[in-house]
Length: 174
Image 1 (tube, rainbow, N blue to C red):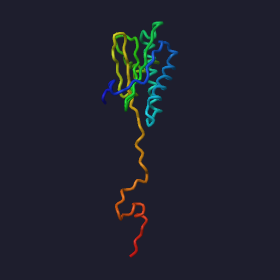
Image 2: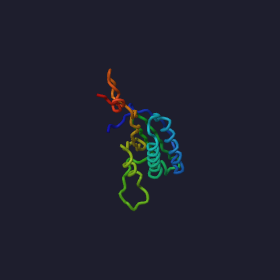
Image 3: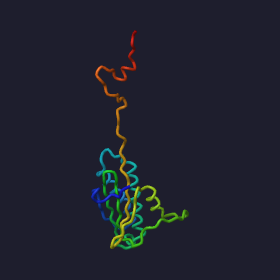
Image 4: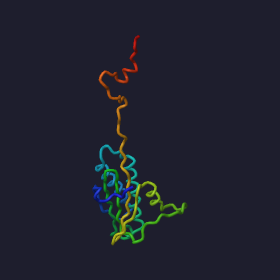
């Protein structure tokens, strides 16, 4: 899969949030609103909407729990959403350390599964390091219903030929 660039996508929403756990419901509301407004009408939105809300919330929770974004009283993080013809991309920019997020492999842990969920649901995800923090991003495909075809499509008629439905019911007399 080709990684989308800014030229392939358009920004449809961006917001800075304070680094408090209580703000996570606002993150879900904003990303859902941006997506619903930005998606083409024909797109199948339900599963995409659920997945965008889930993954954006996981990344925001990680920013709050594991970086200065949530440990410092003036900490904050930014959420940005991009929309392309076939992909949606969400970025969470935090005040994180230079080291990237790590997947945890302890099945007995009661937390720390956010990146595992991200890896399982997103088609692509990654980390970009910045001067004063990092950006964790993910992409999901936009699904469209299969093209609808009339059930009674008939083969083209030729002059002097009967349509298939009439030919099946006609009888010849000898």
